[in-house]
Length: 112
Length: 113
Image 1 (cartoon, rainbow over the protein chains, first blue to last red):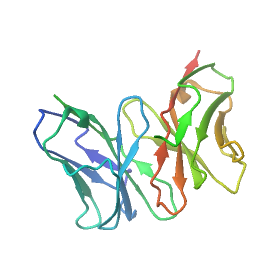
Image 2: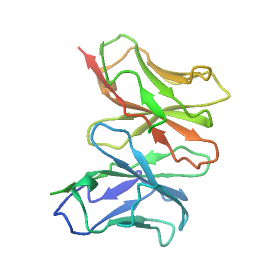
Image 3: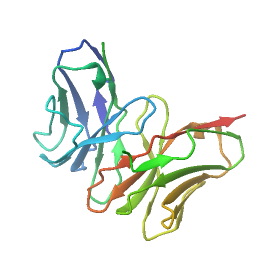
């Protein structure tokens, strides 16, 4: 297990299209987080899973965003009807209850 | 607005000198603080953390200082190396919020040869 992985690393899409990102956490981590980072800013919390349960959602997560972690392992983040303001780096992180977050490399989304 | 912020957006230091990166926070309910390093095109990398019941914590070449009286956090990097060039973020975690971190906007550290 080499760490948190995210796919794709880059995604360019046209406004109005749907996109889906995948995160594979460290296998023994039961907590999984999604953050969003815009250029020059720190990451902002979006949502958090403990196993398959989505326990927290930020106000930033509009109705067009949905995240799942169906089997408590990998997670997907879908954005429907993308807008230019959705352009950002989407970061996934995982942890065990006693450990710190380990971040993946992120998926950079560009909405044209 | 953000509860964590940074005093300086950029910092340039000579190789071998010590670096000090500062951070101010405003949420008195935060009990856990972390410094992350982020290189271009990569996700944030954990550097060091400190809990609110401590004032100082040392790692390898790094020291974090916490001043709860003035709500100030700093990261000291000893003998700064070219590989330390990156953006540094402080982040805070409010008690009981399961690592929902609030990040500041970052400081770009550039190490000059």
